[in-house]
Image (cartoon, rainbow, N blue to C red; front, side, top):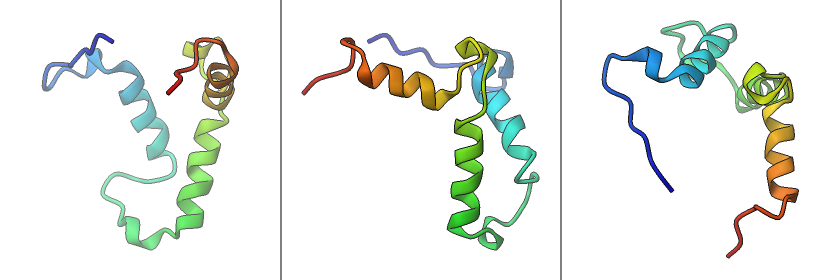
Length: 78
């Protein structure tokens, strides 16, 4: 499988990563002390983000895309 690495200080090469960071900032402000959040809080944030439709997935959620991959004949096998 090809692997692509982005150049340092080149956020335009990391579109999905930068978008996810922006979405996380809605819940976790920059510099926030993560020790103030319980595991349940963090799990709830992850659940919301994984069940939020994304344009890049044709307005399907990441959870739907992942489930489709697991159910497809293209899923990795051991």
